[in-house]
Image (cartoon, rainbow, N blue to C red; front, side):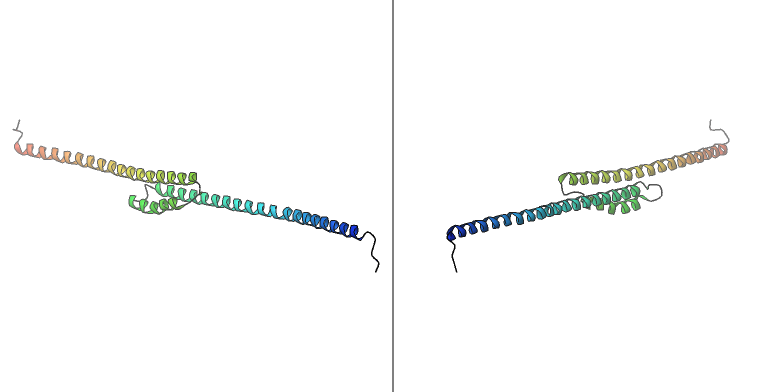
Length: 168
């Protein structure tokens, strides 16, 4: 077979072509890879953030529902006894403590503050129920005093009547 006169330059040109072709091919493939991989990573990050946000909203809704149930139980003072209200409200109060709204310190501080306020509110409602019972007891005792004063006056009148009115 015949060899060209410029075989050396021909081979150098072919190697240069092959080198630049491979570099160009690598650049195109990496551009396509980056074009698809980076948005996929961003999408994964956005999905994680979206899931975290959705979980946070669900936890906040759960916290709000438990708090409203607690408040409805704590405000039910006339129809139920104090012990029954406290026994129904205590599990709700413990559920309030267990709900985690956020992993951040702000969410934890808010949970602790709401739990403390709910606990104080229940204690205040309990003291109020005790005070209402005291008012009823005072009214009952005043009525009893009035009855006893009437009985005492009747007894004095009988004693004075039996004395013949000479005790003056």
